[in-house]
Length: 329
Image (cartoon, rainbow, N blue to C red; front, side):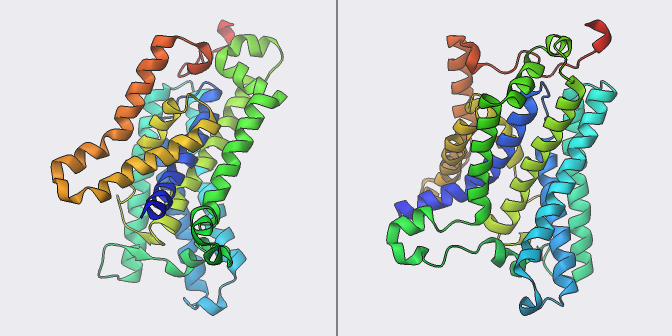
């Protein structure tokens, strides 16, 4: 039961890890992107659309589907859809200097509305009796695990039985952590988020870094939406089933103190807190609802503690949420 609980917590936490890692990259440039929930939703539906088209092109015959294409098409579609949302956000906030908070919230509304529209359209096309669409054939490729994992007992089940997007999420978080802390690109990006005027005076292209950070961060977050559909929901898309995972990913950024490596631990902890709700069904609905609040409560506690300690390395970028006007430099 303990092994199953941990594996379930990891499965629940991976979409949060993608979302928080993408948001950390974005926020390091000084952009507070509250559109992450909509971006993750868009990434999910974009991958679903790509998968739906490919499955129908193969006549829904598993033997005719190429495993590489079955994975690559929805993967690229999710990245493309999420990146486009990030590009819209960048254009509005960097080029047009729109308010970042309002733009992010509008992007969330747009992403969820677009996802529900496309999801309902696909459901109508399939003439499904249920308000959902099943892409179980594609999901089987995403959920494939190492063939020898079952022979290694608890070790194989705990460490080797996850879908490849789980391992990819950890790799991306570690790579982002290395780039931010050990490379000149990361140093430039952090300087843009801390003091864009000084970075601009030093010859760093603030506009380019903010565009790239937001688009790359959005692409990473979009993979979280795809992982949720293909691995957690086993290829079944239902409108509004994504829940509040996008907002939890934003809360996880604060919990992780803007460190991708800490987000790995935090995402699995959040997944465990969410999963605990399934193990207390005998304690009443009220207690279950209280457990659903735990990730946010933990985030608030961490925020209070870090604010009291006043350590600079535990604070967000100094210019977070503020637009940069070069003429005011």
